[in-house]
Length: 578
Image (cartoon, rainbow, N blue to C red; front, side, top):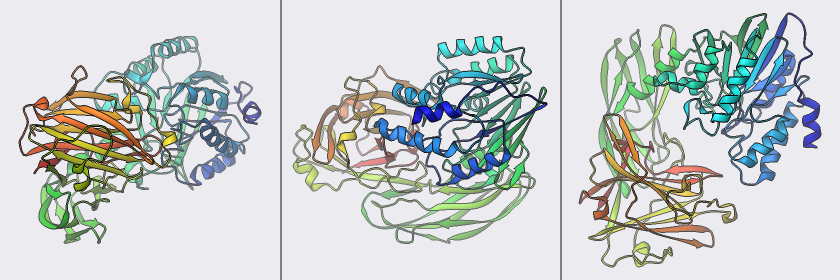
C-alpha cells in the first residue's frame, strides 16, 4: 500500500512548460503539532494549484523506536497529501530522521534518497539533509554530501535558477554568531537564488550576496503564541518563477504577506528583547513546604525608538502563588531603564510549576510591537541535602534507611521556561550526605519499561541518546567551574569538567568523575544510586553547591528541576548541606 501510493504521487517533474513556474513550500508540521492545521494548509495549497509542492522537514513527530508507529505516522501524512493534484517532494527534518532505520523509511516514503536534486523547466532544485550533524559541522553536512553538493552545483550552474531546501537554518546561527558556514558560502558562490529552511517554527527573511534566505514559520508545528510581531504564525509559501526572477509570497490563512514582513533584523531585535530587556532580582525558594514571601524587582530596558506606555501583567496559579500588584503601569522613554517592584508569595516551595508569567506589549520599531511573555526567571530553587550517620550501601536498590526518611524532589518542568509541569513519567530524586560523600538516589518510573532505550554501556559512550538523568554540580559555588554527568539506566556515564568564564565555554571530556554508580530495576521503574566523594570535586563549599538536574525519556520528552537548564552555572539551583 505504502509503496504503491508513493509511486503514484512522487516523480521528477520535467514536463512543465510555459513562462511561469509556481511551487508551494510547506513549513514544519511536527514538534508538538496542532491538530488540523497541516490538513487545512494542504487544502489551501490544493486550491492554489501549484506545479509541485516541497516541504522543509519535520512532517512526522518521529523519535520512535517502534518502526510500526513511525510507518503509521507517515501513512497519515501520505493520506493527507493524497488530495494534491501535483508532485510532493520531501525534505528530511530531525523529527523525520533520527537513525539509519528512520532514513530507510524516509527514502521508501519519498521514493528518493535523503539528499537529491531535480530540474523543472530551467530551474534546479537541491534537497539536503543536515539533520544529524548541524550542531557539529559547518552547515551540517558530512564530507560525502558536501562533495556531492559541490559537484551538483557545478553540473547545474548553467540553469537560470537554483533553489536549496534543508531543515536546520545553520545560516542564521552563523550570521548571528559571526561564524563561517561552508555550505552557505558554497551556495552563494554558485548564485543559488533562494534557500528555504524550517525547524524554528518562526518566520525569518534575509538577503545576502544575492541569495534570499527564508526560514518558514510553522505549518502545524507547535507555536508559543500567534504573535505575528515575533514571526509566529501558521503559514506556507507560494513561489512564482518568471525567467530568472523568483517572487515569494507568504501565505497566511486568508491573506498574503510581503516576504520581508518580519526580517532577520526584526528577529534579532525580538531575541534581544527576550534576552536583555527584562531582568529579575533573585527570589530564593526552598524545596520544602511552607509559605514564603519576598520582594523582588523587574528591571525593564527600552531598546525601541519610541517611548513605552504599557502595563506589566502577571498570570499565575492562585493556588501556588500570590503577586502584588498583579498589574503595574510602566512609562519610559527610548533608551531608558526602569525598576518595578512586586511582592511574591510562594505557598509550597516543592510545587512551583508552572511558574508565574510576565506579559507586556513591547514596541521595538515604529509601528511594530510584540507581546512579551516571560516566565519568572527570578526563582532560584534550594534543595536540602540531609545529613546521615550511616553510609549508603550502593546496590541500585532504594531500600536504604536514608531514602525512606528523606522527601524526594518530584516537581519538574518539561519547559525551559517553566511554563508547564512535567510531560514525562514520575521521577523521584533523593539527596543525602555525610562528612565525606554526597549521595544521590533516583527512581525513574516508566509505564512501559519494554521501550526503555539503553544502548550505551561504556564510559563516555552516547548515554545522552538513551533514557538518562543529567546533573550539573558547581562544588565550590564559584558559578564558573562545574561538573556534568549523564547516566543511563545501565549506570554508564558520560562526564565532563566544564567552565564558563567571561562568556567562553570549555568542556573537558578527558576528565573522569569520582562517582560510584549502581543501577537497578523495579517492576515499574529503573533506579540509580550514586556516591560522590566531596574531595573528588575539590575545592568544594561546605554549605552550598550549585546544582541542576534533568531527566530525558526519549519517547516522551525531558524535564528539569531548575530552569533554564543548560551550561550556565549562574542559572543553577542550589543544594544546601544540612
